[in-house]
Amino acid sequence: DKIRKKMSVLIYGTSYWKKVINFDALIEAGAIDRTHLDMVSFADDPVTAFKFLTRGLRKNYGSK
Image (cartoon, rainbow, N blue to C red; front, side, top):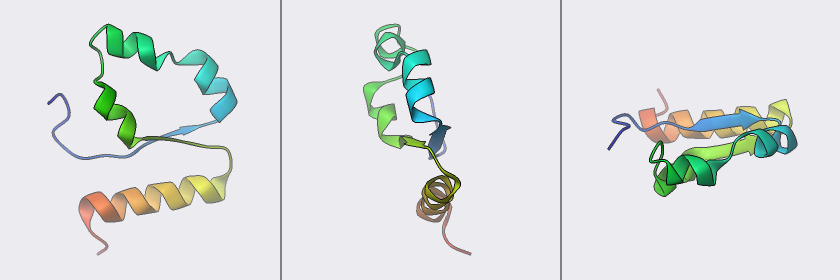
């Protein structure tokens, strides 16, 4: 219940950020909940990133 608005989180640069961000430690510390990982996605190129962000915006805020 820490996040009220639905959102999509894009992390660009998979290999780098998977080394830098320790999601298990964040969960253990209570900073995030394991269910929050469902909204996180990784991308390594602009086309994939754009598709993810577009899909997330349409899903969470409609396609106006």
